[in-house]
Length: 95
Image (tube, rainbow, N blue to C red):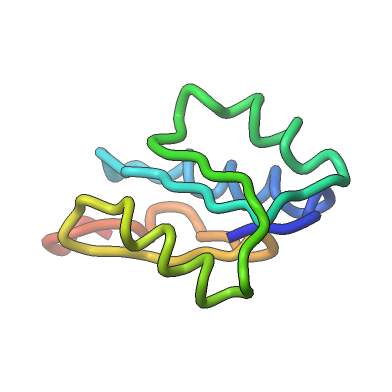
């Protein structure tokens, strides 16, 4: 979930794409950012499975939008100012 996070979204995205586990279904739910966040996200568009940018009713509305789009068995939620350390998305003792 993201809203007007141009200063942190790049690090967040890179932390996802730097993981060695694949495949990752990456869903971005943006609350209608106006600060340049969408331009940063657009640079990574080829790695994003689903992208929604529209006003929402808060963080839980945003989470529910993402969950409704998800098709995997395991869901991780990362906000725009959060990041994963390397090799932390894994299954079956791969870390």
